[in-house]
Image 1 (cartoon, one colour):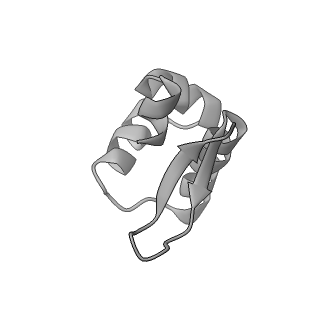
Image 2 (cartoon, rainbow, N blue to C red; image 1 turned 180 degrees about the vertical axis):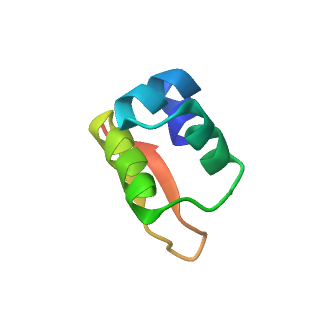
Image 3 (cartoon, rainbow, N blue to C red; image 1 turned 60 degrees about the horizontal axis):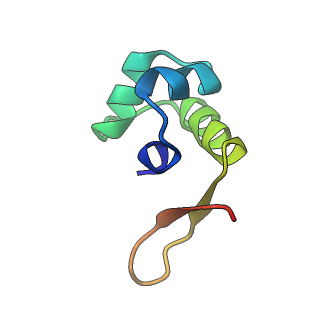
Length: 66
């Protein structure tokens, strides 16, 4: 959701997070990744303008920073 909201392709996000395209694909399929890998992807998305929203009864989510 965050990647699509930014209009990033798998290759672009992989480059921003310094991970492989296969890693992004695995994340999006819900496969387990090392915590440091998830943090690298999260940091890249946050730097690109995504804000992660904690669970508030409706589940966790994301939005673009204004």
